[in-house]
Image (cartoon, rainbow, N blue to C red; front, side):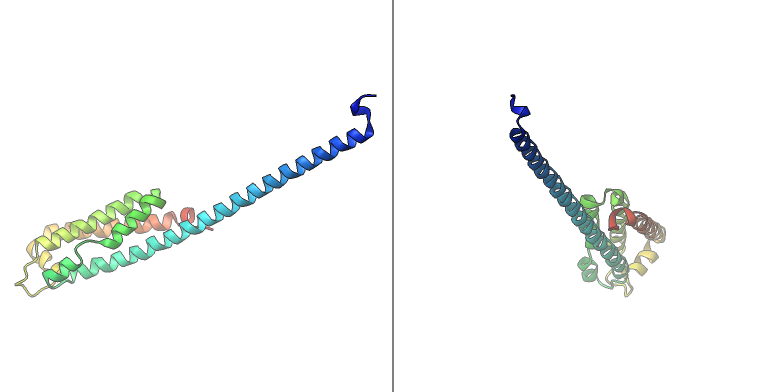
Length: 169
């Protein structure tokens, strides 16, 4: 009588195989659950970062208005760089590649606006930086501000367009 014909050995083999199969299935279920949890946490992280981009975008619009309303060189220097736009760009660089080009265009347009305002500011004139730039260099000022507004709108549209991709849970 061979070992496989012995009922006791056969029962032992079936029991061992069932145990191994159970362990294998349990490991697969645990791996799947961990993957689902990781994926959900990643989506939550992306949503949080996307919300930060939206908040920074709103703050950059405020910067746009504040820097043009500056009435002294000190105020202009205080708002010397569009930090909110830079932070937005950094978040897009790390998390949102589809927003990277519009974010870069927007940040660069704000820097160009800042240069225009600084180049045309005269502290002896009692007017805002925006009014002075408009008066001293109307064409340049209008070109820079119109471009900033256009790329701002483009970036806002890109944020809206990709919201379902990046911010959906």
